[in-house]
Length: 331
Image 1 (cartoon, rainbow, N blue to C red):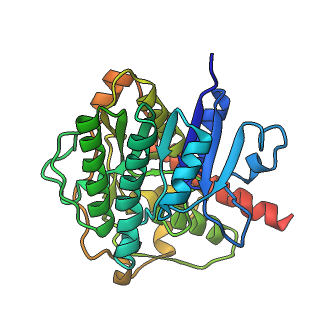
Image 2 (spheres, rainbow, N blue to C red):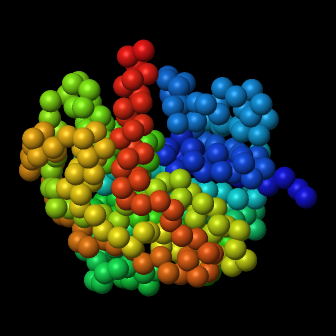
């Protein structure tokens, strides 16, 4: 059997790193596109990069930028992937209000560039596009399905809605194998530090070890459908293994508030959260999406995927990883 070759944009991100581990386990050759930076340390995949049995043998990194079509075309031609996983782009919703133009270019136009490269060079390549629950924004119904109307409430949501529609157009117009994974919030110890879940997990660990005294947050009543990133990358892979390309909502179907997350995090370190958490309206978003909860019935029935682990387990994993990091630095 011919070796499967995967090309991943966003390989150094949370999802990219877990997906890389999954694909390597499944015998793929994995190629990732990385930005040229002065800092060569790519923490989430550094353990793979340092493994002489993997790096340069089944894992390869290529310098490129989502705005540089010429380089993207060259990498695509050289790698000759059978599967393309497009995960890259500025994905912080709050930040998208501060840098709307670059967010829209990375999330929207970059997807168009990649779709055009695939259509032009190798239309049989299986293409995964990382969509998001943020396309539903001020949702007209709850829970949301693949058929729910898009009503984004942030520049990030607007850009992703554009890219999601484009993916559908290229699938329908050119017969390309393009899937939209409409993923709801998914977290892990590898989540970026500017995301509220990581911020909470980190603060709980640091406060418990006497390194911080409080945690300042925005809207505690804001609710999200939070799952585990390790489970969600399995769903991503399954979409491209199916005989027919389609769009799938990937979610737990449960909504939890930021308050729930805080409560669960401080419970792990056995502290009363109310004593340490302060509220600051400056952290509130201009518009807060309402009732974003996903219905994952379609992917359960079609691809036999379901999330593993509970909300409490996810929070515990994140807080314990933070505690472990602190203990390592001490020793």
